[in-house]
Image (cartoon, rainbow, N blue to C red; front, side, top):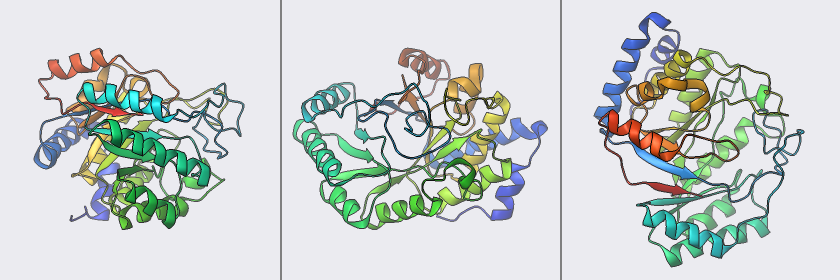
Length: 316
């Protein structure tokens, strides 16, 4: 894949609001040319909630901050198998196990492998995992177990990362993505906009993501959570959020660019504009610790836009 020229990416980032409509129209044409008209839908439930030892400033699942989110027990294989069957019955093609951890220790990794086996034993779904930072041995075991996709977000530009996280480095996250590719799993990686970064740093993040040639890029918008260091930051304005969407699409033309957490807060009544400005995937329903719109509302929006829907994906 030929990446966009760096100078062009930063020039797009600095285009003013008077160019937004043209930017969105171009991003939509690029999305249609590279990815077609369909939108992929995904539902998300946390398999391990709360108690994470990391200090990501946006995250209510961190145990470092006085967040109202408390640790919950791990789901067991029977619970996961039942949820996977329900997802498949809804038309799912992939099932992702998500854990709020720095990375898996041996006990958790064995539990993850048991859950992967439970999904394989009871469904025909492809299995994805999101469980933090990996070493090579862990990545190999996940790949050998049949994990198709691994999600690990870079979160923000390398130049801004230390302002958001101090308990681990950007390089550790990047190394995990290298290991995911090395061991034959698909890369799913994205980030969060609206944390105080500049437009140029959004372009920087998108370029850094592009270097990993991700098959999927979740785009989150900061939804300030009580108790976190970013609790008092104002969400992005809708047109600024739309600018970020178009920018990510133009820098990552091939990826499945997915609306993720915070879109309701940042975009408000302009969520449809993002679908016509580069987005070709959505997480529907609730997120890991925040509420979303109903799936029916999102499906109705897509119907009004005459946008075809790809197979529903269940994400656990």
